[in-house]
Length: 259
Length: 308
Image 1 (cartoon, rainbow over the protein chains, first blue to last red):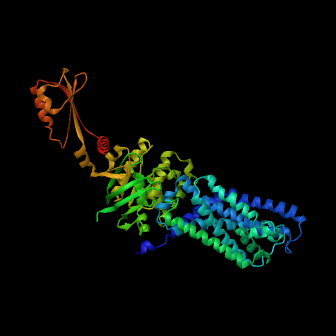
Image 2 (image 1 turned 45 degrees about the horizontal axis):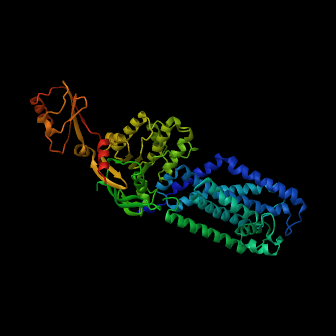
Image 3 (image 1 turned 120 degrees about the vertical axis):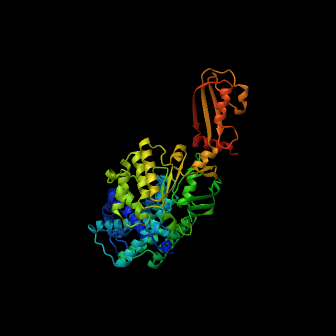
């Protein structure tokens, strides 16, 4: 029967619009505050301290950290946008409406993850525009830059969505971003090349997935990478696949949604 | 096919091992107002949540207008509007935005005129640009109803619709439910206010401890299980019920001034007319008499008492 199979595009659009409206309603929190904090990083590490640091891989330090800073906010904002978007209705109870609506799981994911990813991509581009005023930036592989940007935003929005469904309290909602994602991002080569690390740490750091994201992203800017770009892309796709698998499992079992 | 919702063999066991529903079989007829009565924790909300797709069932099948809620969930769910018990709305959205969102979520094309009509019917039109957080409790309840009606459902679930609602809103709500029924909408309401079921329902189902213990037309239920009482105000107090009247099992009040006769429609106790003749014969005179039907509430309490 046609009615059964027909995708509910109107629902996707309705959810997406509400999510975007929330971003503009809370523009201070969702756009301005990450821009300010990134600018602060840039001013402190890029200009004040960075002026005393030599070039890395032939790139001025101020320019070197830009891709890492973008990734830093892309990761944290994707996670917080998506986790909050699904946690909040769960918390106030208004999720009943979503669960009782003729919407497929795929449509729910597209709408929420699409909304969260759109917001963080917009934010990433704004953040890119800020240091462009201070340091000479070049983007050697714009297609791959956009590809990494979108792929990372989508992957980590999915990851945030999972956290939002898993979390039972606001504390848990903050737990993963604060205790895992932020340290991994800082240790993922935002501010340095992993070749600068002493022997053993260079190996340890290869277990950090964020290293691959930042390295690949930086390659798209300057053509220089800590690990080969193919590996970066591969690792990003692996993480995306893991998130998709977890989400599929959540939806198949109704985990913390329909029980 | 006259039933619009058909529930068969539905059970729900939560992860904790708690059996919320034990094998529910229930058919809701098209166009009726069905009241699901039961004490707190009986399983009313769980049952509704399963039909609406909010909670997964452990076993059993449910169809809505012939559409299986699992296999054919889009068709099934698009027919249903749900007004949950709790006031759960995104507090920062405006009334207009949130009602249109609901309509979109259920896949209906935008229709400003229809949404306007829903809001006007529920006296919310003046508040359309207000954020939900600024509304009073009664207004929020109306908003929840507006959201449920925004997508033109054929079946409306009202879970405890008048809990904590003032008299005026309750009257409005009852009037609205009757209007919807005239338009052919099937209405299922859960309540533990029995007067609500008594005032509105065509049929009543009683659920207790996860089992449906009775489903009956309201009128038949009242007739079958309803008791009647006749109270006589005596001219002169009696010290004891006269011997000739023993077969009526009359109750004499402590001060001897009132006699009460309890009878029901099924029992073979003799009728009121013969009691009055026998009273006359025994020389008992009365000043006034009063009869009353037991309410659904009393019926309900009696039913639950009979449960093992």
